[in-house]
Every structure is written in structure tokens, then in C-alpha cells.
Length: 96
Ligand code: SF4
Image 1 (tube, rainbow, N blue to C red):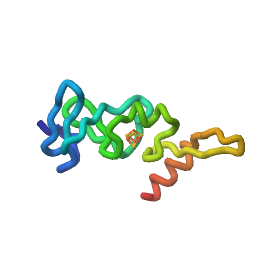
Image 2 (image 1 turned 180 degrees about the vertical axis):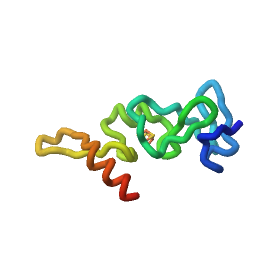
Image 3 (image 1 turned 120 degrees about the vertical axis):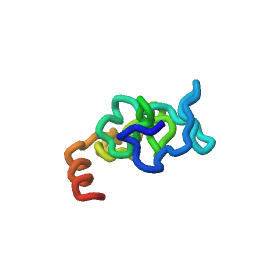
């Protein structure tokens, strides 16, 4: 079941189903390409899942994921969401 990338206990007891990864009564969908670099991703078998949000694609469809550790959303004066990857990476390096 587990491979080298799985953190201890992270998705322990999870079961792959045709709908997605079933974990504690929640169906998780695999992460999407925009999640690449996020520290929250956890590998399970040959796919990666997000323990913070079960449907990453839907999270990103609404804008920048507010749980992401690799990018940070900022709202500019026109109300548009901007991404500042540098700030996010500095914040991650400080461990916050
Ligand atoms: S926290 Fe957001 S960016 Fe990170 S893996 Fe989950 S859905 Fe993707």
C-alpha cells in the first residue's frame, strides 16, 4: 500500500475507488498541475492527493488555492487576484 513518499499515517486506511481516494468517509480527487510544488500534497500509491482540500481542481477553478504553500494570492486594487510565488516561497522557507 504505502510507498516511500507517503508520510506516516497521512492517508493510512485510505482505499482507492473508481470515484477517487476514499479516506475517512471523504472522496479525494487527485491534485492538478497547479498544485505542483505545494507542500500539502501527499502521495498515495501512484497519485498525489491533498489532505487540505478533497477536490483540488474545483478549488483552483475559483481562483488561487488559499491553502497553497507554493503560491500566494493577492487581491490588487481592481479586485483581481495576483499570485506572488516569491513571497510564498520565502514564507515557506521560514516555516510559516
Ligand atoms: S493545498 Fe491547494 S495547492 Fe496545495 S495540494 Fe491542496 S489544493 Fe493543491
